Length: 110
Length: 121
Image (cartoon, rainbow over all chains, first blue to last red; front, side, top):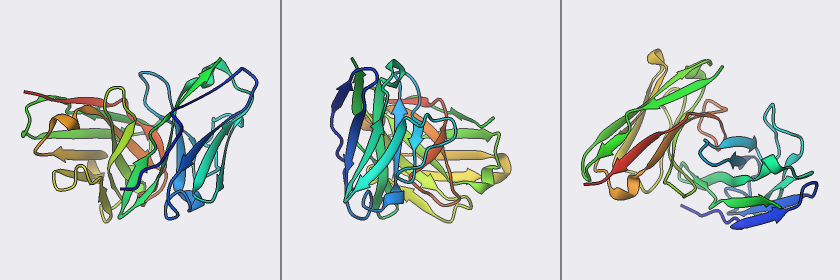
């Protein structure tokens, strides 16, 4: 199964914007609608924040947005808040009816 | 309110079997694909298996193919994972997750609280 590459960590100050990248293959991330993003706080189950590349589920702040360039998807969080500090994971199709998660990015709000 | 409640986890010896269950409520179960996702302590999530609404499409991670079997009973609003030949590396929290579509996609909009499987002698 193909891997999805994410930076291990990113950080930003309250009010700033940060972007987390997720690099994969043309058949997975390269297909825009085949990318989702999850937020996970310690001890909690992951929570969906972006799906089909750029759609936000009901109840998710519009400070979260998704985009894509080539085989790299990105999650941007604007107007950083303390509550955004968490681990973030992308997920995409990996071929042969399998899915794969990225390695995760730890977001620190300074 | 959507609820997914996993059960069946526990301590099991290497090579033995275990069956996990997920009881679903708060939505029309047979309208959606379902998945199992696991997460070892301190690690990221790993997709394990997915099943379409009518069990017509199944998928497994390479790490469990041939050892794990996913199934569902739409009459009982339940999802299952039969795990055979368990290994130490299968130790993880196992989450049941609901898809947003009938066919397996990459989008899980609801997750259970997880059940811990520990494989150790």
